[in-house]
Length: 144
Length: 83
Image (cartoon, rainbow over the protein chains, first blue to last red):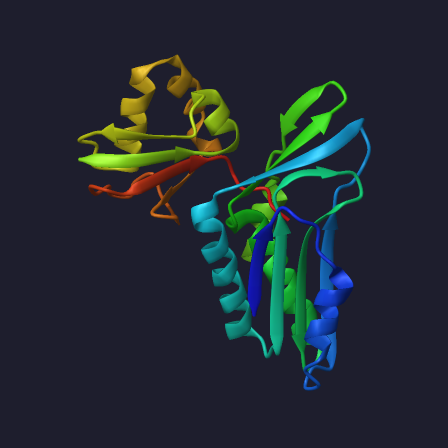
């Protein structure tokens, strides 16, 4: 159980390899968010609220562990300026069984999107724009 | 009482300030917003649509009706877009 907020890139394989060392885990689910190109996007900038970010992520992790039978959880979220194709963040969950791992990973992603203090700004060839939150992001929380 | 205000994303850009300390008698977040909007056009613009603004007191999300107390850190920002 660990959360990291960092500027630097991370090694997904190394993170998952670490989680696989616990042989009680029969399932390992990972989600990686990547900077998606298109519409002349050149970079994505991530701002956050340093005093709040870690505690918000830890609260999401703790809630997932209270709801499902999990072995381990990992959240890494990058901040700063990211180029197309770079990884933005990852959530990984290991559990004895896959249903718990899948559900907990989705739960953590849904809450991370709307309850962790990060903001994305898109840098286009011709200017910048803050990304708007989607109504569907807030709606996604209600299913839990 | 004295509050530490912090701003993020386009709220920070519109107010053109990352943080500041204010002296206020506002009892709630909503009263504080009314006070700030009366200060100058930058605040008025930043808080013109409060449905697009979220607030946290001492790093916990809260409501516009939440009560304020001396020494708190009050953060204003748009809906979050991480992930």
